[in-house]
Image 1 (tube, one colour):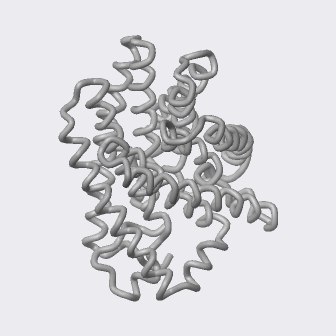
Image 2 (cartoon, one colour):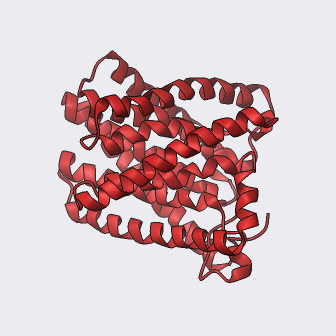
Length: 324
């Protein structure tokens, strides 16, 4: 994964503009939704959510346009990324960005939200089938696997969150089912890879936080579809808590990491568990969940702030969009 991002990218650096940049949009969208939910559930000032929504949209448009420009000028480089055993999994970060922006604009502009939703669902559907076909048709090595594998397939659990209130639960359950099934399969594969094989490369260590996202988002999706804090919902939320606290317990593993764009993998999962905690508090009125929500909101905000500052620092040093 390339160091940093890009500042007024000249053409020779545009060639190396990575698809992983959409992880920035995922992180900012997650933070925006956190403050939008905090305003409606915990009484936070709504201005924060609105400001972050504007920043999020600007960053998304910028990254989207740069990648389109790369596709036009350096199409062969895009094809290489699309055939890369690791980078292929990050293409779905673009479809998830559309789905997250659908959620961000749900209460701001319904028309814009609908557009983001339909584009996101179409892209996510394509990336799901394409990625699974790629896995089946290519001889992948165990070292190619990392938690980013969750993005193109397990990311389907986000569709019911984005489409809830717009589309039928019967339709949304299709995506939920795919996401849950492959979450179980890929979790087994990845835990086997992490425990019994070589350690993750340093630039992929932040992706361990992606383990938090599937159960947290699945919990939010399930509550949105069925509004029932039943045993299955509790199971999902408690798994999200477990992975969150486990990674907090491993904090020393992350303190001396060199900066990579993969640091943005810290952000969206933390936002997901923050939102899940607020949803749990809203539907159950159990005070403990509100305490978790406040804790995770603080941690998420600080994490996004630190990662954003480090990204800007490396942009200014022109250490992003460079050949590996």
